[in-house]
Amino acid sequence: MAETRHQDVRVSATQRWSMLGLGVFAQAAGALFSNAPAFLLPTLVGDHGMELSQAGLLVAAPTVGFLVSLIAWGVVVDRIGERRVLVAGMAVTGLASAGAAISSSFAMLGGFLLIGGMAASSANAASGRVVVGWFPPARRGLAMGIRQMAIPLGVAVAALTVPRIAESHGVGWALVLPAAVTSIAAVTCLFVVDPPRPARSAAQDSGLLDNPYRESSVLWRIHGVSVILVVPQYVVWTFALLWLMADRGWSAGSAGVLIAVTQLLAAAGRIAAGALSDRVGSRMRPLRWVAMAAAASMGALALTDWLNSPLAVILLVLASVITVADNGLAFTAVAEIAGPYWSGRALGAQNTSQYLAASLVPPVFGAVIGVVGFPLTFAVTALFPVGAVPLVPKDRPGRQ
Image (spheres, rainbow, N blue to C red):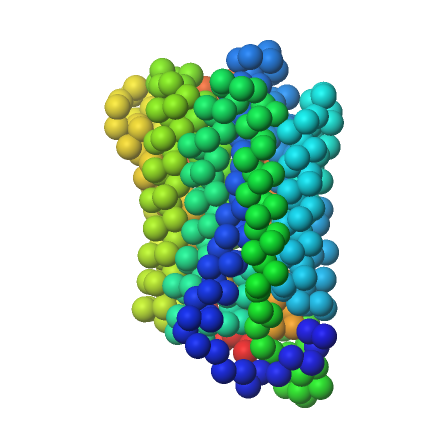
């Protein structure tokens, strides 16, 4: 049982990095599934005649699934361990993706996307705990940055494949890829080894079972900052393809390649942010710097788009990289502060609050774009990270 795992377990560097690799794959598979619908927008709007706000509801379905299940998965992870959760979650995601691929109506498609999102969220808390559990604090920022790389990596794969498949073969065939990848992830997660942690009796004596939310407001503030910073991230992620094609006249293939390259750069940015946090010995100072940079990049994107400058495409790439760099920093801090017996729930709460905001972005900002256009929407989006800067708390020692 997870409660009896002992802390004094020696592990080689190869084993440690292998666990990280498995966690990255599981997270990337879940990200591929949950972000694939965003790249169906041109097909849904252009070929099927859906309103952008209606198509945005389909895009948001996996995010809503994440929203309603993250804390529950966190509780399960705290109780039964990471491997079982990852295997079960990826298997159900694969089945849901297959169901979405053969759906005969948009209502059925939305339902399977919702179920798949509920299952895919298992990787968020479980893979995060694998990283925090197997890596020492001095390397944890880098390791978590690599783990967070999985999300833009999954988005990059979706950007390269989904628009082209949907354009040439339809929505159903475009969803076969995430079905296959998540099914493979379920099999590979059988090789995950749960990280060590103190026995429950020892954890009781050291205070690790105490509720960290009652000790201070730090976790609440990190959750709040992350909610605010997820808005520009999802505005860029959701509407970049549509913006490039509708406003800039790019083809689906060319736009998909640019977004894929952008996501790979974003992955590198997350690794760099994590490594920086290890180097400066702080998660919160780099988080504050990222919020300031996100505000500046979104503001510059709004201005250059309003001026119809070709620099707008470059600013879109820059904003895409910056707006995702905060995730690993906040995720690592939450897990460290919560400790091994609360990190599953705390990470679930962290992601739930983020996905609550993220689920509203496609329909709400899709409607806003339809009324005021892209430049003003980008300008409004820049105000969110401005508001996040003063809310970033000071660093607090973690519960090991």
